[in-house]
Length: 294
Ligand code: PAF
Image (cartoon, rainbow, N blue to C red; front, top):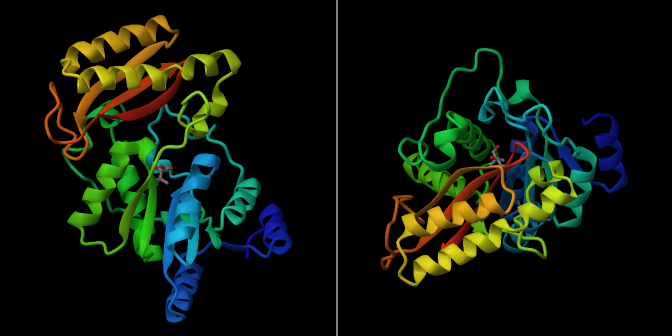
């Protein structure tokens, strides 16, 4: 039984908050025995309209939707923002309910990583480029927790946002390689009116930093357009990086054009779909985005 604020919320809106893996399994078996399909939306909380769109997509295609909220410590590096990651479970539950979610799964760290936990889950190749190059071990943490969640929930479908395109690609490979039967569904990035991809990390920016952040998407789009029109991606990306720095971004972690599926570097467009990927910093806040090259 959930405690404090969460208990209040679950009574107030008759919302199902589960904290134990056994409760999730029991709930999902019950739904399945009634012939209902089940969707899973894995999150780390701090829910915003981007998550809302994932939950809405899930509730359109599944009869019941579980949203997990777990700030997974194993995907954060030592220097990263684990401690300041937003913790907003009560408003998260209201948003889930509002978006058509049926239950939240909010386990604690010991439930997910009991004493003696020793298993690693790692997808090689796709994980040592882009975000994986500057966040060593990050994707091992992601695949570890996502593999666990997919096993715990046994959903028919699990929903992930396209903003984290590399994560999505890595998870698709994980599911294929380990024969996990949950189908992975991608959902388009939700942007504000200026094109800024919604992210929990946007809340760390003040208004002048937000104005800078809002330039990212259009600069990437321009570059994607130039590459699609025959430009060399190394040249276009170097030019876009320069424009980003002149626009007030502090540091560029990467800005690259890659095949959307293999994530191989692309110099000129081919028949295969490719995307432009960026990770940039404003005041130590790391933002990522990507755009398809068409
Ligand atoms: O994208 C996220 O919020 C996280 O990486 C995920 C998939 C919930 C795993 O912790």
